[in-house]
Image (cartoon, rainbow, N blue to C red; front, side):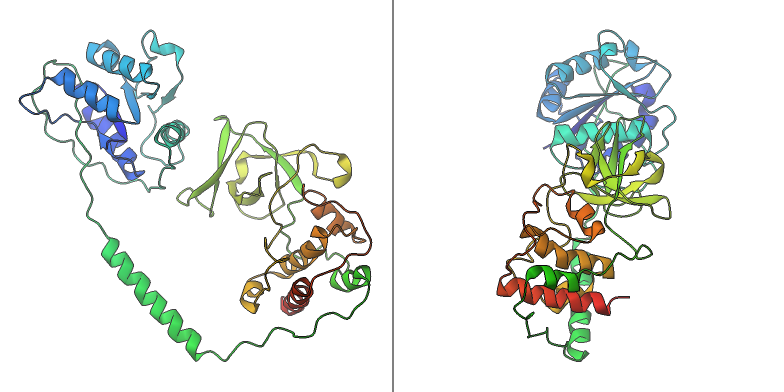
Length: 389
């Protein structure tokens, strides 16, 4: 099935080839140059292709704005609520399409983070029901040959060429890595067993006092203590899995939506949404809320959901591998997360601050009872914290 249909004027074919290739590189099946069977009319085929596509990109230019075919195709797409408008010249879409927003691509040369191109990808994600694959800019392939068609100033399209599959090589690479990792693990000495002794029977407040030393302001933190909003003229900013525009998009933050971050070096900062989504955002799009610091005493109306570090640390006995990758600060928060779920009132102001931002945390008692699993996990995480640098 075709995901994206592209409507344009033949005069702009070389320019539209770049758009078609970028849409294909984003993981969508494209129909943009006509291969018409000899027994079917051009109008019937075009209507069928638009109807079967999930989105229709119309490329407006000085030439296409005068084309009756392009206008007709845009009208079909608009009526089917799948129209995505772009402009490659300094031109407004003709009536009545000038009442609908469009993405300006006149200065776009394949950059994945171009404002106009980001708008196009966002529309395709919504209309096609899946996220665009991150793609590096690639050289534009020459447009396919032009078949005969009924109108001189109109449209052409063909399914994007199928790229050779690298899946077998990828699977072979994964297998080689897996074998190497298995061999490495077999050669390692056995890990030290988790502490078998559980904390002695005493009040949970005393137990927690041992587990929560005074805050170290110099330690790295993932506490997300700064409130922020975006400052992006597009009205939204992507949250990415890594530091760079080629990494996977894991979420979006829209204009006016609050989120959390902390002061970091570099151009990409870690952020966290109210629903717990965590990732990286380009620093220039982040504007700290006045004062910057989120305080549990401020009575803010939005709260975080989800776990702080480990979601099931109260129900599953953790292993050394679970704690091995944690930083000193993460191990501390993971351990105290177990007490927070029980509703413990923390003496440490940093812990009160961190857990006060979570909707599930309700401080109710100075003494809480831990299950045997929770006690074992507290001991394991305490050992991980002590061992971390």
